[in-house]
Image (tube, rainbow, N blue to C red; front, side):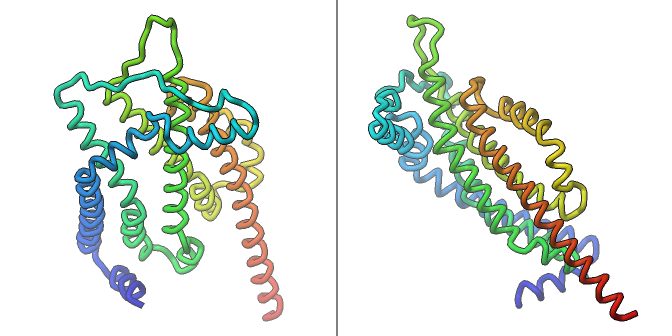
Length: 284
């Protein structure tokens, strides 16, 4: 009821009123991110010691699961007993700046559902009733896919990429001593890129709703999409084939999910058109 009243009020706003409403939506979103960033900054031992540095330790959840699977399959190579690298800070402000950066990233990920809800509250009053009904649950599904993508990037893509890069050597005389800036930047890039890539079904849904893409079009360009996904995966991941394939595989699955979504929307549209045509014929 309160949301309907809010939408009615926004529909009668002038341009300046809309700018004022947008300002408050943005302020509340920024405030939510900042509050959670401060909380993450204060919880340094958990956020940095456990979450950020987690994939750099052999007792990380993913490594333990791989070892359990390896023991079950009789493949000892899946057990990671050592990550041959050290993390250093070669700049005076390195640790503090990475503490700030990691706190902001954690705060943004945690606040994303609320931030998108604020964005949706601003956009939804400008939609027609038909568009609102079609986009029902958008906040839930966008937030769910974002968090699923972030979890995939953190628990799957990041540890396997870090393990690969840590064990890659040109010569045994070369030791891996990574700067804290490089480590945090790589981890952040993998997590956020994965979270964004997981929005593909949502993008396909709205493009299909607007009639810009069809299931036949998606099928016809499937091979082209595979090449594009592999290229994008190579850009957003470290320069190794394993990371590229790890991010590409779920995106290809999500692309197929997008085709199914487009098919379903087309069937619903065809049923509505048939019902509309039937009603017109009965009226005549």
